[in-house]
Structure formats: structure tokens, C-alpha cells
Image 1 (cartoon, rainbow, N blue to C red):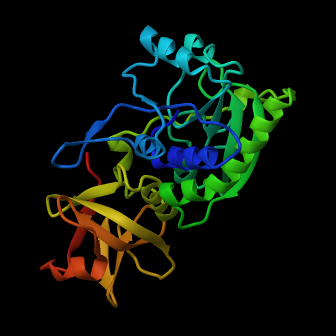
Image 2 (image 1 turned 90 degrees about the vertical axis):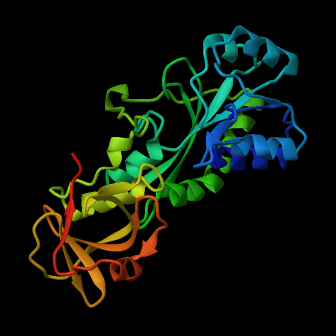
Length: 306
């Protein structure tokens, strides 16, 4: 059970492994892009390529969904980036369900653990495989693997780094279940749990009063969506790639300065170098190409959006 490309990688791993994949559950096809073209999720694309049956319930609480699952007679559900499952669904597999989650639980429970780990400047993250219960990312742990976070990691690059250790953790967890070794570890220190809520559009607003490092972390964490955006010349621009700068310039928060072809922007603490930038509705450009279209390069002002 899963939807995005990250989940599709685990389907590929399971399909190439020793176990029989009897079916796939994913979200319904959704309109995508400017043309609003109805597009299947990556997990569905891969499942159909394998000739696997696919269910796409609008709601996992629909009684007909649980009935359809009964026909598959599955031993175990493997859930990766999908949904909280009700007790009626969990009961449809002999051993219930395991979830592959992109954090070292109980840290970052929620829909966006990878993004919030990067946004908060964490140096490490990881993958947890645990038995699902009816609470959000709450069940007992079976396996965990630590994954380092680099200064230039984005959501997508960190997810890529999680696939191999995540597949290894999943294999070990399934083996433990097969062998009846369910001496799982309860998630200790529930009071230490931290939330990782679903991203909102407003999370991408760049607040130039914050330190450069914090702004950089949020921009790379929220790439590709919602991105890091601000106002420039009464238009919305996205900072697609940045770095905290080490040069010495005195700039007010949001004030831009071009020096030797590089664009630096002042923040509440330190300077931010903008490497790639995108005007809303246009394609992302290296900052040099973007600046060629700017008439007054001596008076650059980027504003936090209200």
C-alpha cells in the first residue's frame, strides 16, 4: 500500500524478492499539471507493469474496500507513504501491517518526516519499520536504520538515500514476523515524539528576518513543493537552490547585491547566496541568466510575502 515514487521503490524490491505480492493498493488517479491531465500514481504504474491487481479506494474506511482485501487473503500488508488504516482493514491480513516510515521514531510522526528533518537542520534521519496500530506512527518498532543528512540534501535526495537501508530493514522485519520473533520494541518516550505535519503552501514563504542557514534548510526541505518563495518587483519568485554565504557584506534582510556574477541576499543573520531562481510561471534559471533580464541590478529587493 503506497502512492509516491518512494513507495514504488519498495514495491520493486518486494516483487524481486522471495515473497509473493498478491495485490497493490494506492490512491486514485489525480489531475496533474496545468492541463490537469488525469495521472496514475507511481505505485500504480509499476503495479500494472508487473500485472498486479490494483485497488484505488477513495476512502480506506469504505466497507467495500475491506471486503475487496479479504479476497486477496494476504498474510501481511506493507505500507509505505499511504494512509492511516482503520482496525477493520488491519484485520484483513493474518499478521496485520508493517509501515516503512522516513524518520527515527518516535521523532517526526506525521505525513512529512523527511521534509521537517531537513527544515529543522537535523544532521541525521533514518527509516523505521513498525507494526501499525490505529494511532499515527505509534506502533511497536521492528527495525530502524540511521541515514545521514548532507548540507545539500533535498526531500528527494534524502528519500533516495533511505531506499536501500529501508529495504534492508523491511526484509529483516518480515523475516522476524515469519519466524514468529515479535519481540518488538515499544516506542519509548512517547512524550518525546515530535510532529511532522503535512506541508502547506504557506510553509514555503521565505522569512528574511530568519538566519540564512535556517532559510536555506527550509528551501531545500520544501523542494519541489511548496518551494521557497518571496516577492520581487511585485512578482512571486522561487529560490530553487541556495547556499549560506561566507563572504562579508552588509545587507539588510531581503536586500540583494550582485557581486562578481553572484547574487547575495541579506537575512536576519548572515547572507544567502541564490544559485537558481524561478519567476512564477517560468522555468528555473541559473541566477546569471535570471539577472540578465533584470534592469536595475543595483537596487534589488526581495520581500517576505504577507
